[in-house]
Image (cartoon, rainbow, N blue to C red; front, side, top):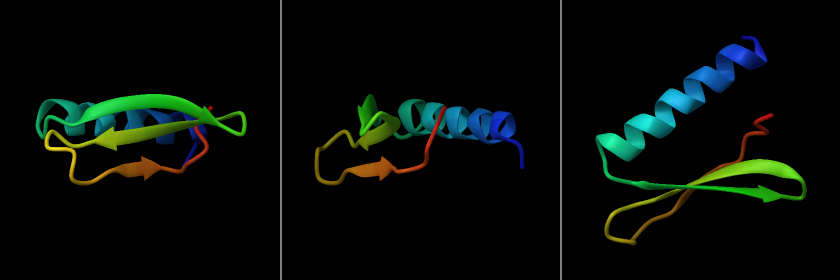
Amino acid sequence: MTAEKAETLFTKLDNIMKTQYQFQIKKENVRGKPVITWIPPFGTFECNTWVVRS
């Protein structure tokens, strides 16, 4: 899988989590690498996407 295709799939997944499951999407950098955190509507669970996304 190419990096471009992977980025497209992750972006779609982020949008699904935001629109269908009402997660907040928090974008930040950890050690210079982009990281996406999904924050659920009730604040009971956090999931980090620890994939290097350029």
